[in-house]
Length: 109
Length: 114
Image (cartoon, rainbow over all chains, first blue to last red; front, side, top):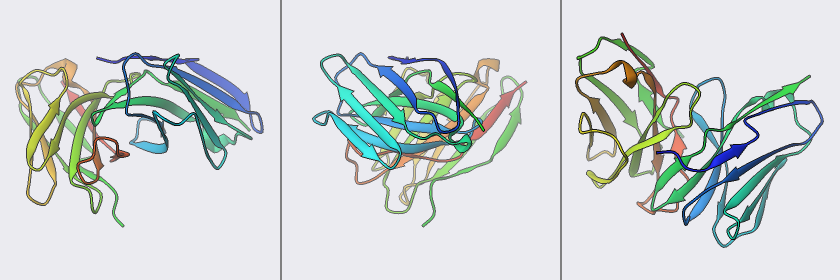
């Protein structure tokens, strides 16, 4: 079964703007991972944040984790048309990934 | 360095048939997980293999079975196919059997059941 929710379900922005996606989860986690998926293809790993970390950066990506609220956010700065994709957060518990339904991001050139 | 590979890319079957999907993990990885992704949904965990044993299983019926070979590659078998089994099947690999490692996904196999 799927747990957690992503918010918003869909997001439409202009190139150069920032995009923020939120994720809530329900169980205790080892870590939380964010993935991108283009047009129903395989998932591309973006970033992993461990349960004892609060913030992590990778290039234009910034992820935060609040274990007390069981929530995480993904910020993409200075978005590009190539960032158009579905974004999923996944709770990791004992090696099993539990995904939300994802956020569909559309970046208009 | 080859990433995770899956075969076939697409597959069309009819109800009641059986299907086998294949996955080769990323070089250096020994753990393989399988996920089912229905259209418009996030992937759902089917099971995970490590050291040729099923280590964890999600909420899927026994019609879904798997195998891991000594070279760490894996197969997913689905018997008595139902229309609802139509989905993208994703394989993911991770290294050294640790629970906390990043999982790297293959491109998936698109299964259509008619």
